[in-house]
Length: 340
Image (tube, rainbow, N blue to C red; front, side):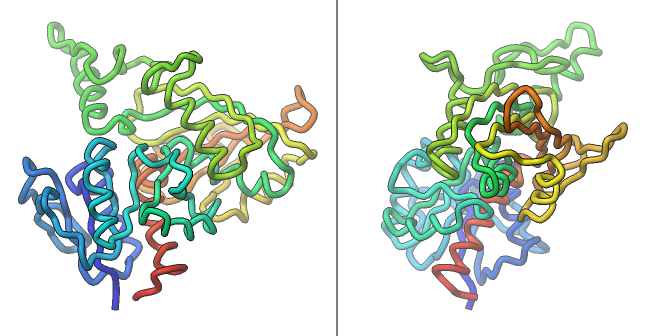
């Protein structure tokens, strides 16, 4: 017997990707229900070779369903996640609402799978921020070997991280650049995104960091190790899908770049593409649709005692959101629920 699964927010970019990945990975589901807001009621979405019609999340009875994958944003999650949990359905939430609740596990399956047991506290599991998820997948095996003291990361984040509106704005502005009189003013982003980069993702905090930068530090500590110091600069770039990160790592112990490369080649969820020649690295265009977190440009940082530099790229709609959510569901099933 398989699972009864709910995908909430099934008409959005991440919700559709969740359905695709559930089918691709042959998740053992006897039933999959697609939920959306009332305005999207009846919209058809694909699930493998099947077509599902969305149902209204308002008033939906989660009783008898095992797992609900949520991609509906924090405001709606605040309403519906407690309802689902109270009706016995485990919620795996992609929003930021529960990530910093000490009673709710924040999971990247390749990094902290044992934390899954804490789902029982509130019947809710949090999925991390997209930029954090790919970074900790790359860092955890290195941390296990040499203990990370400090991380300095600069991100190059695609517009799909801001949802459909972000994708549309880049597309419309790019077209408008070539048609006089049809320029598109910024609406979703703070400044023009076409042919530009914007060093702000989310709101500014009193510290001068943006909330996205704060998230990367807070989530890395919760997922990996509270002693790790993280400083981030998060930048939106005119790329449709795929987040990139330049990561500088300082370790307690010396770690040779060749050993680091070997460790990462064996690490779950990581693919190393690191040739010291033109094009011997992975870019966002090449990672789209892939499950892996790609690591390139592995090299010693000689300016600190025990330093390495890495280039990390991943499909943010997959590992950064939908894939990690489905992997959490698989982990939950294999370790705890044990159906299928």
